[in-house]
Length: 285
Image (cartoon, rainbow, N blue to C red; front, top):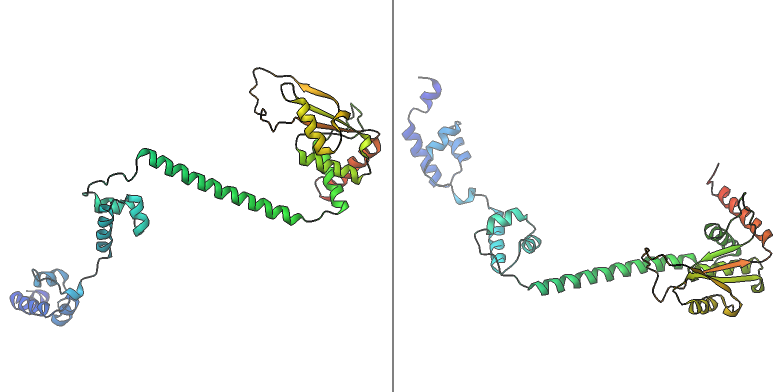
């Protein structure tokens, strides 16, 4: 008989002691230390059938969550709603409440669609407010423009939208076309800065043939402050029946073409200033 076997030979006596200690409320660790039994298998055999004392039981937090989840399910909540309420995973919720009957839908299909559309409308309204607030702050951040700043802005605007001189076609004159009234207004303000008087301007509307030409001319006359009777004959764009036009609303006013007479020198100044901007910005070698 080995020393280890000899030590635990009187199993019944050890069990009586272990059971007595267990019933006194000792934990397995305390019984092990008291009886000097360090074999876990033997230790468990000694107290087999004896429940552990209450103080050694760990509280199970999930039991409380499970009970709350079941109660919420019985109230008619969905898995998503229970997840938001309790902060646990939907897989756990499904395991806890799968034996419960599925709650009746709270809303009809029409009501759900109405609620969804109302939510989308609120979301769009919030986004629109955010957009407008961003634009408002950016607009206010500009403040007053100096003549130099206006000159630079006008040069960049013309280079983007105006007619330009080509080596194969000499066109050293200011000719500008755009459909945005604010762009036209800024361009005219730039011409004022350059000393161009209104009598040097030749205006013409370029518009689709099916649009209200006279109405468009009146509109651009209001924007520019120049009588529509002085406009040159409108350029009409022919309609391609295979093309689906989107610019057919009342807001469609075509484009306004503005030609400045005797503007060769101004054109050269504009082009030179543009390349000065490019050099200053380090945009080319």
